[in-house]
Amino acid sequence: MKTYSIIYALLALVVIGCSTSSDSDSIEEIGDKETFFNADYVLLQESNGVLSAQLLKSSETRIDLSQFESTFSNVPQTNVLFSKGSIFASYSQLTDCDGQVTIHDFEDDTSEIIPLFEDLVACDLSVTSININGNLLYVTYVLEEVSEPNTYFARAIDLSISEENIVDVELDKKPTQMVFTNGRLFVLTIDLEITDEYSLAVIDDASTMVIHEISLGYDVERIFADSNQNMIISYPELHTVLNSDTMGVVYTSYEAGKEPMFYDDKFSCFDSQGRLFYKKPVEEEVYSNIPAIYDFSKNLTILYFYENFLTASQLEFEYKIGDTTMVSYDDTNSIMFVGYRKIDDSNKGGLLRIQLEPVPELLDNLDLDAVPYHIFYQ
Image 1: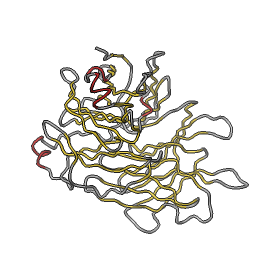
Image 2: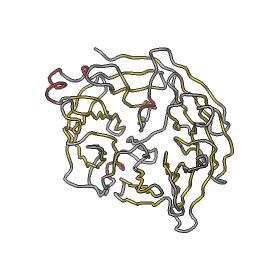
Image 3: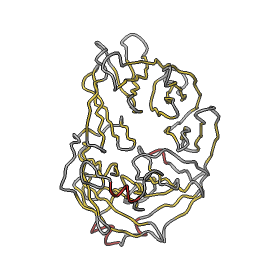
Image 4: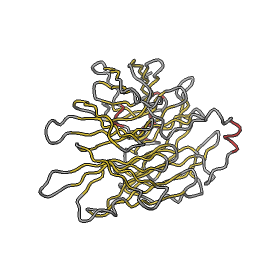
């Protein structure tokens, strides 16, 4: 058995793209709810640098392609993405001074395109991150000047009104990532002019003003919010938990060789027990990432090597599993999803359904004409 258990001191992260039921919904009510598509899952998949949506249907015995189609319009794969719940958004730059955000809600299968910089004239800009909270779309961007230093902004756009809906907050360092939690926008910035150190700018949602700035040092990899609405600041060798109310911090260091490296995932998925499902980098000959789970209540990490639940024939010849591209968990049905790239075709992949208890067991595999990227639960 090649499943390893490693103890780390970690805290819970944010829930994105997982299937969880609220306390107000019984299992029967969830089963009776009708969705727009008559599909159980929406799989976001990538091929030749383009993201598309594939609807999936499932039963107790198998998962398959749905005959229905989503209205989701294919978009280029980009680093400027946002996903939470049923919402997926991506940024596209049209010209040096023009761009747009496409927002798709997979719950009702509707899309909206938001032009961003119609108020600017003759500029050279780059967008670094986007975020959505309710009716507000947040965009961080850089304005490059020919003979002057660059200027940096966090823009808030109220999607519920059509006029005077833009507020720009100027930042003193380049923004790289942002997270909205607990009524505040947390923007990760880096000082490119002098120190190359990172900082966290805290913008109050009500006043749209920078109310606090925290020095973070070097090598910040990722920021995100946990289930308690606190901020997690991830470094290669440690992470920091920042209380979003008091700004107090707690540091957790890792033992050498046992670094979790969860900062590589764009989307984090938790189950109702607070366990994190993600792909972990490993040094393997065929694949560089494998499925993994963090159990924060036990400070336990379990690595799921394919050899534990697949035969050699399935792994190498039948499914042709290359690198892991996506890991998620359907909490309602207690099933782990693992997306992978085919070893003989980088534009094709497959999706595994795995039952975890009492031991990892393969339920089925679905071959795809694209590579799994992210999954939404209906």
